[in-house]
Image 1 (cartoon, rainbow, N blue to C red):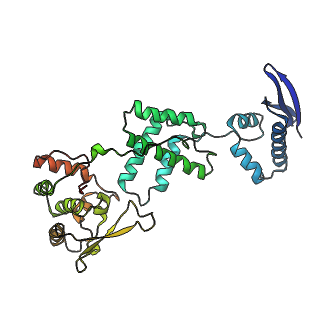
Image 2 (cartoon, rainbow, N blue to C red; image 1 turned 90 degrees about the horizontal axis):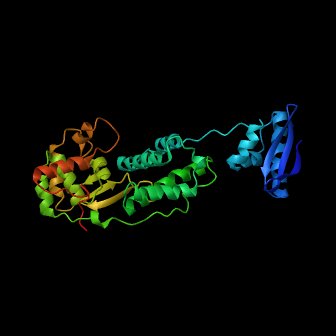
Image 3 (cartoon, one colour; image 1 turned 180 degrees about the vertical axis):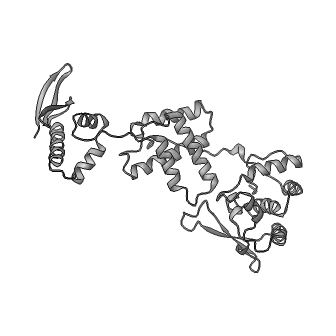
Length: 332
C-alpha cells in the first residue's frame, strides 16, 4: 500500500503519495492541497492498486472517480503505470457520431444547419481538439469569433450557440464529459426581422406562370395559401388530401418529436383547391406523393431537394426580385 508524505516546495508545503509498483518506488506529487483531500486521493490509489493486483474490475465509485478526476491528476497516475492514459476524444469524431446517431427522421434543413455548426466548431477549435479540454472561456471566445470574425447576426449566433450546447449536452449524457462548457454561455433569441417580407398574391400568381409544371405550381400554392413548410410539402401524400371533408392532414417532419406536433389539419382554402386538383389530375397513375416527379428526380435521396434554389430561378425568369425566404410565402 502507499504512504502519504508532507513535503516542502518552493511555494510552500505540499503532499506526495509514495507507492511501490513491480518492485520500483513511484511517487505522485499532489502539490499544494489540504491533508483531507490528499488522503482521499491516496485511498483511491490504494483501491486501484488492490484491484490491479487481484485482476478485478474497479468498483463503480472508483470508476466514476477516475472518469471525473482532472486530466492533470489522471496523467500523474497513468505515468507511474497504475492506470492507462486517457485517450483524446476528438471534436470532429464526436460531431460526426452525433449527427449520424440523431439524423434519423430529421429534415434536410435541420441536418444542413447541424453541418454548418459542425464546420464552424471544427474551424475554430480544430478537428483534433480534445473535447475534454474545452473550457467555458474557450466557448465565450467561440461566441466572440462568430460575431467578430464570421460577422454573423444575433439570431444566427444564438442558434449556433444553442446547437453547440446541444452537442455537448449529449456528450455529458453519454458520460464522455462531466460538464458542459457551453452552459452559461448566453445565446440570443433575437429574430432577424429584416428578413420578413410580405409577398402579395398577385406576385405569387405571376411566379406560377413561370413554373415548369403543376407540381411546382402546387409548391407555391401550398406555401403561400396553405402555410406549409418545404419539408411538409415534400412529404405530402394524395391520401392526406380529404376532398370530401375539404381538409388536408399535414405531416410535419420538423415537429414530429413534439407532443401532438407530428400532424395538423388545415382547410383546403378556395385559393389552394385549383392547384391541388391540377396536381392530382396531372399525376402519374399510382402516384403517392403530390410531388411525385420531383421526388423521383431527387435521385432517391431521403432528403428534401434545394427547393429554394429552384424558386429563385423561377423568380429570375419572371423578373421578380428574389425573396429573402424563398418559400416563406405566408402572409404576416
